[in-house]
Image 1 (cartoon, rainbow, N blue to C red):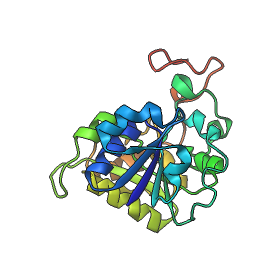
Image 2 (spheres, helix red, strand yellow):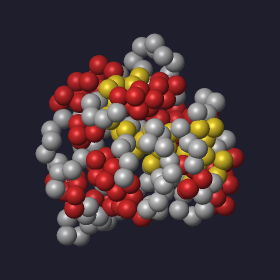
Image 3 (tube, helix red, strand yellow):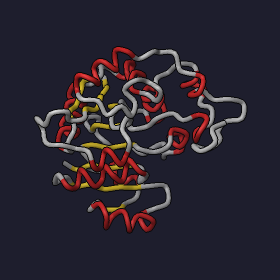
Image 4 (cartoon, one colour):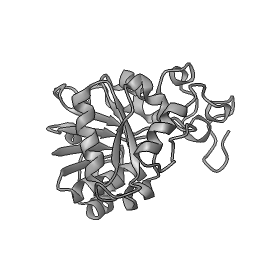
Amino acid sequence: MKIGIIGAGNIGSVLALRFSENGHDVRIANSRGPASLADIGRETGATAVEARDAVKGADVVVVTIPEAKVPSLPKDLFAGVPVSVVVVDTGNYYPQQRDGRIEGIEKGTPESRWVEQQIGRPVVKAFNNIYADHLRKRGKPSGTAGRIALPVAGDDTKAKAVVMKLVDEIGFDPVDAGEIDDSWRQQPATPVYTGDFDAAGVRAALKQADPIRKPEWRATDKSPGTFENPA
């Protein structure tokens, strides 16, 4: 498949590598332009492009940028892109550490539903609950005992199936985590977040999730600070 990745941070870079390793045609873009991605291109096998070129002709588009940056994406980024193109959101809301206050999320909108509202496209939520280093190094062949599983949430069953296949290809068991309105169950501070559970463990963790966002994951009047010193 042709996969466009918007964002070249830790998760974006690892996904570019893993998808390329599995034979996909990967293009990657960031806010600074292709010249800034020369090293990542060499390391991952992905082609560095402008954001509009990453989505043009793609079968799958992965949006993997800080939550606070999502509204800054070009408003016409998906203009002319068929509705059949699958859009994946890997993002997490870190109000005290990075993003500051995002009012819609603070009021209870699931992170990925909020992303949909900003970009004007339905998304599939995936790859958000695992450390990038684990995503790169801990994938195992299908059928391996204890294989790490990843939750995948989305409203479109066909789009979700495409993403679940990609999850499996790069070494993880995909677990259907419901619709986007259920995706709060895999947000930061929930049991499944960074848990590295197998499929049964992921299903159990999703059921144990509490919909009340914990105080340490809500913005304060001093937000944001840093990951080292949250505010």
